Amino acid sequence: MNMTNKQPIGVFDSGIGGLSVLRELTDLLPQQDFIYVSDSQYAPYGLKTTEQVWQRCCVIVDFLLKQKVQAIVIACNTATVAVIDRLRLTYDIPFVGIEPAVKPALNDLARPHVAVLATHNTINSNRLNKLVASYSQQHSQVSYLVCNGWVELVEQGVDKSVSSRIVKSTLQSLIVDKPDTLVLACTHYPFLQNEIAACFDYPVHIIEPGKAVAKRVQDLLKITADPVNQTEGEVTYFTSGSVELTQRNIARLLGKDSQVHTLNQFG
Image (cartoon, rainbow, N blue to C red; front, side, top):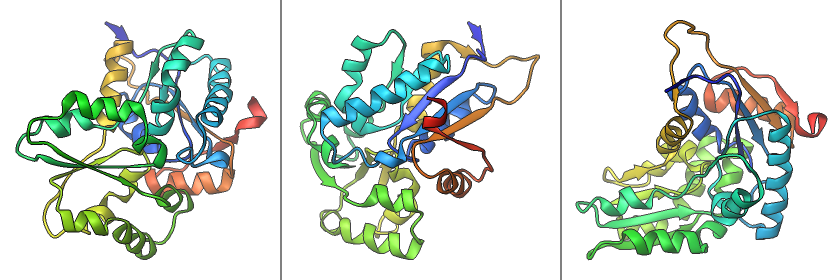
């Protein structure tokens, strides 16, 4: 197997939600270098047309290719379901996408009622419908909920008291229905996991696919730790939005100081 390759891995999202995936990647592959692109100026992708999402993804992929990345992680459910197949046909580089964790949720027969929380575009995608159809069991019950405004709660760093109130208001119908499992089908939502869990008077099971994506990247690129060189990998951050806000968000969500570059400056 290959040792850690210092050629970086690209990771991008419509904003900072993909930091939840980056966190799992750096935990699993601590010696690997990463380049993270936050397309915050154009967030959220969840209400954009497929062609708009495609155009933004091409801009970011072209940029990452100039940075000589060895693979690209699309840390955005909306972009994955909308354009990953087209990206794979267009670009000669490995892509790893992120999809709603429907398979493990529906395979858990002890928890038959599954609720998928996502953006409008993900909920209405053929890809999600196919996933559910493929893994539904005889007694499965699947609910869907579009969580409008949740991406903005994370992007803007809204006070927890405010975000808790908005999350609870969004979940009212689900609270009554008492689902067994919640599938967080947007990479921003893990950063609201405490607020989500607090809405239920029982230990609802919550699944997000960050760890599975990190493992897929490790397996695809055959990366193993170097027992001799224990140097920690570097993460370089770029944003199409506010550098200052992105730096504050990284500190808030990951607990790390960072230097963030303007995407267009290096494009």
